[in-house]
Image (tube, rainbow, N blue to C red):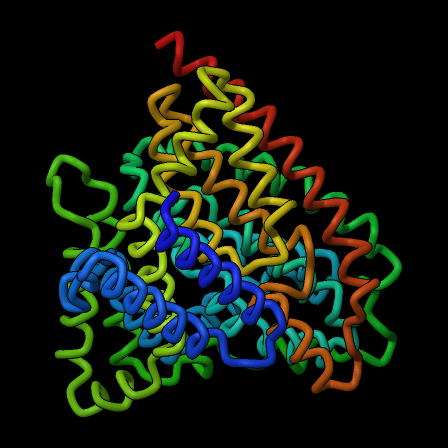
Amino acid sequence: MDVAGGVILLILIGTLVVILSERIDETATALFGMSLAGLVLYVAYGLQFKEFVIMMEWDTVLFVTAMLIVVAIAASSGMFQYIALLLIHRTGGNPRSIFITFMGFVFVISMFLDPLPTMLVMGAFTVEVCKTLDIDFRPLLISEVIVANFASIPSLVGSVPNLVIVVWSGIEVGTMFIVLLPLSLILFGITIPLLLRYYDDKLQAEESSDWNILYLIKPSVMIKSKHDFYLSIVAMSILILGFTVGALRVEASLIAMMVASGMLVFSHERAKDLIRHLSWDTIFFLVGLFGIVAALEQANVISEFVNGVTGLIGNNVLLGISFLIWIPGLVLSIIDNIPVAALLAPLGQSLGSINSVVPLALIVGTNIGGYSIPFGDAPNMIAVGLASEEGKPIHFKEFTKVALPLGILHLIVSTVYSYLMALLFALV
């Protein structure tokens, strides 16, 4: 590693430290870090800034932007709340049934939404339902955060880290879904009984609760815009079809952008408002982060890191899987999982030569890392914020007591499952 590479690495470390301190906005920090990295490249190698930015993963940035547009329109239509209320009407007001229904619904929609929009869509709705039935909403909020993260594992659009890893590691989306969906289902089957047992005394409705009030609410009331409701259904169907029909060999970013832009066209005068309220902080955070990673690549820091770890792991499949699951899942879980995914994705690509299942382990680790060490990830903070607003705060100890043991259990199960799948793929 030359001097320039060392300086850019220090810029990355400094950026992560500042982000962790939460004293300065993470998007501003990432963009400033990218600018400094660009300056180092110019001074050291004479690389022009316009040449530097071309190296960034703009297709991934556009993919994320497109998916945020789709999610914004779908969420604003009330589609998810409509479906959730339809399902709740079938529970008869039983708290345990409502808990299972919410977790099942969160599991399904998390295959299409990042955990953050999932909690934005479901968090407030969950609180209102629980308040109507006089149920403590905190167990449901904590459980939804956990389920939303591991349910996102098999889906390309389930989380931003998934997109980053798939694009950079060259993972086949169909293989990813086939291999990782059973793992998510296994984790769901293990987790729900444990959560029900742990929260058994809190999943009891008070005698004063009136189920009829909730039952009398028509699901159609949840629909804020019939136009956006039907538009979202059509768009989601096209996305699912486009992502799953691999024979078309059309880039996922192109499909997503066509669907998102089409939704904006049919939103007519609301298009400007939707674009204005898009999560631009997430988009520009990715721009800044990808810029720093591109600088590391230009300075050969990434290649040296990959070669070093690859040399250490060799052809040991279990060691490769364990590294890609446990490092982001536990050791680096205090850091936002997006930069972790961006930093380790080249390593996942390199280790893919050992076995095609190995890169998938990185997807597992980054998603589980979202809750194995609580209070670091944005969806966790949404749950905490909602609880605080209602005067029933979720304390660090309370969150950790539930999430950390489950996170470790999920990491163990995922490691065993991934290794068994790797052995199976080796025989095929």
